[in-house]
Amino acid sequence: MPSILLDVSYAEELVEFWSHRYKEVKAELESLKAAQPTLAQQPDPELVSQNEKLSELISLVQDESNRRTAAELELRELFQKSVETEALRQCASRLEREHGEVTARLTKSETERSVLVQQVQTFFVQASALAIEARRWRRDKIEDMYDPAREAFVELDFESKALSFEHGQAVIDALPAEIINNSRLYFLPRPPSCMPLHVPSIAKSGYWFFPTVILPDETIFELVVEGAAGEWTYLGSYCSALLPGYDMKLSEWMILDDQTKAAHCARIASQIGAQNQQPPFSVQIDVKRRYDTGEWSVPCYSLRCVGFDMELYEALHVVAKTISPTNVLSQPSTPISSTAKRTAGSALAGMPLSVSDGANKRARSLH
Image: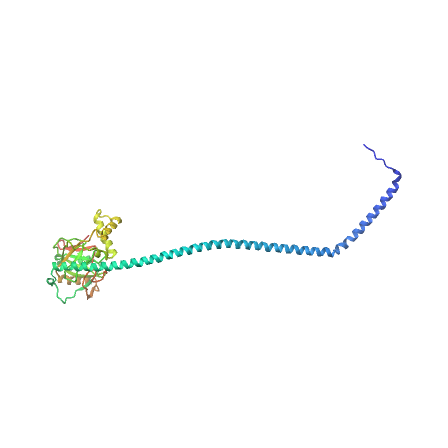
């Protein structure tokens, strides 16, 4: 271990020196301690000013930061809105173009529709004129076959009164036995159940198309037809036979109402398929197509008037009053000539035909 050599000759002076120095430092420290509260109570004005400026600057920086943050958020929202607005503008532009195209197509379609409507109207007028000509041609044939001058079965001033009832079966059931024994009643409801019937007036000959029940030639039946709904007229005694070469013309078929066409096509379709089975709709469509194209035509049958049973006429009115006292209509029935309008004195046809057979004294329905 090294040794440190000290000169002890100066020891007293050194002790005195450091003792004096210690006292001076201690006194200075005490004076500083005494002066510190005074310095704290009296801050430096320049330092205070700088602190205030610094605080103000910090506040300004914070405000600017907040403003810029809000501005940035607003800018982002505006940017997002601008993007959405641009997308909406493009969509609106596309829709406007499509609207223009659709408007142009609609205008073209309306023009074409107007042309088609005019063509259909012209076609219907032409078909109606042809149908009128066909009915006149067929009526001339009926007049040649059955001289109207010989059909004086009622007085010229006789006015037939219409009957009002719902079901022919109820009338048949209420008729006297002597009427049932001596008469065969044929009730023909109005369209669209059957094809049209054309008879100029009561007790006059005419024709009908494909009756739902084909009776043997020379079979006499009493024909009661429906004009307006629930309004019936006794026409007289008739017999019917096929009228070859005088089938329904295509023009007459075309002006028939759709319900009458559909009912007839369904009836024909049911005869094509199996019995007691509903024919497929496709078969009915095919049947209608054949009629619409003229490939098929509806056969015509003559209606030859052979008399007018006044006793039956009066019995029908009595029965109608029995069924309902208000059922007999007071006004005369209008002439009966079938068209597609289905009013009294217009289209008369039917599907279920009620027939009274005197052999067994009861009524039955033929289908």
